[in-house]
Length: 598
Ligand code: OXD
Ligand code: MN
Image (cartoon, rainbow, N blue to C red; front, side, top):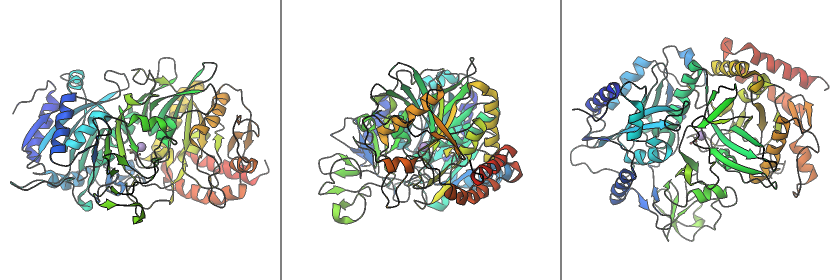
């Protein structure tokens, strides 16, 4: 068989995979609108895509109830030495993992079409962008990839005869025997799901799941796990970060990159509508930032993606009007509920629950049922270009210069509203010890506290101790051009369980303080855990927040922090001798500051 591609390595790989997986047909994606429409029409005709008449060119899918989120327990970083994957990753030796997976892949696409999806992460031709090719037997994956990345012939042209690409092999793991009817969401049982990464050869093998980050391999697998390992080798950063531009009333621009664990409000912050008069925000990305040091020594970021794969529940005109507007057309919804008038609905959409709907599992639903109508990790896939506040510069090939890094998590207690790191090294420590209560974005218990360093715990493709070292080294290279580092917690609750801070657009008050800190124009007080906004440093104009809330939000509870130290120490101790000494030194200094009267 010959293929319409100049790149010999690609032609050969496609041939090998076809011989292994035995699809009924091989199809090369051109990335055109026609192709998208044709595949959607086929999925609609089969009853797997439900057209949504109230949202032009939009469709609802329902996954198998066992295949609803990323599966960290089935995600592997396969390096020759276990230590190179580190304690935060599941590890199997490459030969063993490949042997197991080759057995699964053998004949796994029987009865299905094998799609070859050439894609670019980042604007095609950008000095920061990279090319991948996903092979998948899922047309749902093809359509999602069309939205989330730049797909098609123009990518093959950029690849040329000898260009490098990351091979990303995906199968839902559900071969069809001759005459066997397909199910609406084919996938394999949990024990056969494998989301595998081979960072020593920049290779991804995914088997058995059709959902989100398990299957759209450009996203978490390539743009974070494989890219983070590449970035370390090549001296740049691949991060789980939103990118946002804030413009002050005086017209000064600030670029902010923020890392928060999954389902902690990155998309909301990326599309923030500042409540502060005169401040404007533009969205550049909501999930993945790739950053390189530019010719002027500053750190430049691009959004590696072209769309948003956002959590639907909780997204409303109040919480994120820009996301609500983004998903009015050309959007794929997964695991949302369907109303009788043909629209999607989810908990927290901002309209009352319908008297009757069809829930995410396809069952009749009514409000009294006692179960949510949409899955907690129901998603929308929508083109970034449709966001009303997308920055005109969001596809700028050279990226935007970052001034501020924000880290954070979801913590009901202890962690104050905002903290500025004393310096880069302290900022790396704050990020390395970031903590959050777990959410529904991963299959597992919700609400447990876990350390999620840099919001990268599920996404770092190598030993995280080396990752901390890489960040320390980047700080040295950036020197005076290094962005300032802050830590926030929008999720503080009172003793009786009420939110202390309203969040959303009001977060602009905290962002403004950060911008002023960059310009040395706002006051901060040194505390044992970092610099906090001075009592009157936050702009609270036109905002009624009870004084006691603010006091609590900006209080450093020494006893609570001292009680937290053993957990921080245990967390860092997991990395053993590989942990940079400067990190253990940071804990020691934190303890000292907390124990002395300062
Ligand atoms: C995501 C995630 O889908 O982090 O972005 O889980
Ligand atoms: Mn994410």
